[in-house]
Length: 606
Figure 1 (cartoon, rainbow, N blue to C red):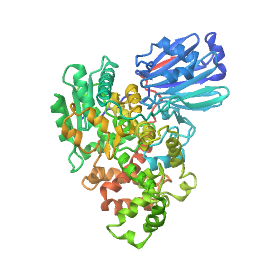
Figure 2: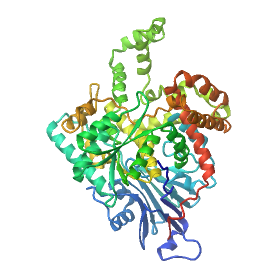
Figure 3: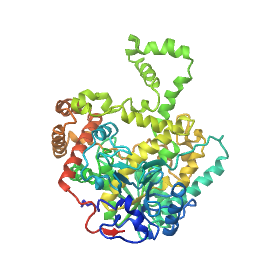
Figure 4: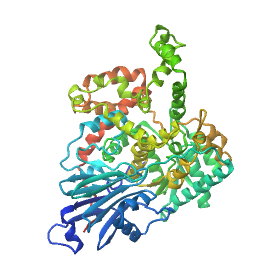
């Protein structure tokens, strides 16, 4: 399989705010006040009053594509109101000459991204953080955030002074400074369960429309679908065949490793829906070939190991002729499909117990000698976790915390950073939710931390590197709004995850897929480290290089590779992966010294 990459950037802009008034009456001599560069996937529209550039497909409140004139006119008339009314996937920048200001915005889930920096009265923006990094140093706090979360959550980026717009946020920049605001927050309603049949019919109508629109949004593209064999990807792939009226191309990844391969479920879906099924088995040699390319293809360190199988799946699609893939991401986070939702519901029951029982019996028992007995240790563990509030409880088994910061990180690095910052920002996100039910609060939390900051960058980055477009039908705004109106028990019924979603699709999806346990694109990296010499050499060389960068203790790296990894390859392999990808990002970024945009991209000067 031939590895490839696409252009690294699609949009860059630089605006001198003090000089915008001259722009309204025509170009002035010297360097223009507005300089914008657009790639092949970026769009622009100008008038005497301003300019708008955008990525993706901004739509109106009825999910119809916005015309360029309507988009620009709305932004110049009332940017805040216009952005709040937008739907679809988009990242946009609007320069308003008359008011000497710039508006930036991204969609609800940051399916399209936009970064910015402010230097005095100059605002620069781009779809990639590294396009704005000239003269910037690495932010130590961002490195810690990466090690803690395996990604760097917006608004922070790895570069000091460069920020990323969080999902559903807009920025207004004028001579007075920058103003960052949320333009959309999920508003959960909590109605009593209504007529299931009516709800199901509405859901299926919206679902088919979302898949059809995702395919139609790129009329010249050859559209296929990711297919893992789970409920989400199987639904999207199956509906793609129905709405297109012909067998759809579906692409699946497998692993020759016990406990990691889901190809059998993908084959079940392919047979059920008459899909043209394309299979590819990723090997350790594939990882060795692609790890440097993928690590260096991101604008900052990114540690989700599923990006490698996603990349090879997209690459296989490109080689088979598909230029646009539909992905199933979002179903779990809209309709309650992650196993932690059921787990945290059990912990929440602890607070419903009589306080006398909790304080007089269970909490003292937790620290007693009895708690160490095999059959009672689970009770003690339950009490220990249940006493920790949300969302901190989600990080109780965080790998970096379990190993301990002092053991893993150099003391001089720890002195530079605040180890509480990632959790503090997670608390802010969790408390900002309007949901009263635990399941809804967790869903809103995951829309940022699981989707916008992790899973969507994974899929978007993998497909971009493979030269394929991607769309997410399950994140269609109409489906998102529909999910907000569902009663909590339709999402999590007892310990049954995504109850409504599965029941609504019971006559559509094969029973084997509805009843399967969630798996995903888990990568057997730790297992393969012990079997493949080339992969192990790449990992060890990467860790040795990282040891000299001043973040991680060299003695911890020795202990990790020589003692911990052989004890539990699947568990400690995750830490090896995180450290390896961090070093590979440093190495590949330094080696590339790539231009802001590739020479083939179009220059536009205002």
